[in-house]
Image: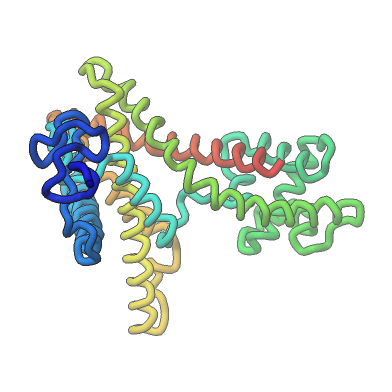
Length: 337
């Protein structure tokens, strides 16, 4: 004879999980829900899948819409306690991060080796470190700088301009006419560059989260007198960087679409689309406007205070991006070691 609770159904008198008496739809001890006979049907299982997908997707779309068109509002909603309609901050950041690295046109966070060897700070240190990894022995500063410069110019032929062409050894290396004793090291450097770019592409997707605590700490330095805690600033930084990733994604596709449309209609690109200068300026102004609105809406400062904090935040964004690139470089190099 079957005892109550042996089979799932309306007649179950005890909890299937902990064995406590069921006083209603849910167990008073562990919270387990009473199981009904129709829950074993394919229709019910399909309905649960649809409900979970539509509910999760709805929250994500609502979060993305609020994030993009109501700067700062998502953080305020989080600290008001209205969290159910939105995706959690960290989950939202990783969702946008995934979209960005899958679909982005602008590779802002994925820095190749030839770019890393040119940009400052610590350009000479990075060049010496790479040459030591490639050559397998210490290399003098001048030698590592010369070979790294030759590698960069071989990867960027357009970078050879009259001013830089005054360095004959670099030009000779870029054109392939390297001395015999350097050919092996230079070939190894090119192979290392390919492996570096593959590895840094994968690592950048995970390390981009480091931008959040950098920005939160930077904001905390300015907002200590107003007693703004790191918890609030971390949530704000998470939403801000998620929004910036989304802006970069949308702007990149819009700029490419404009270029393709102009090329199709006119047969050639206008002057402002032939250089990155105007696109970078437009993107910078867009980010500036977004950051100002997010700060004004979240912290409720006057427009003067919000403008001052906006300048401070833009400096923090630039600094955190530079620190992120340094971190990405050293993590990638030691991952290849």
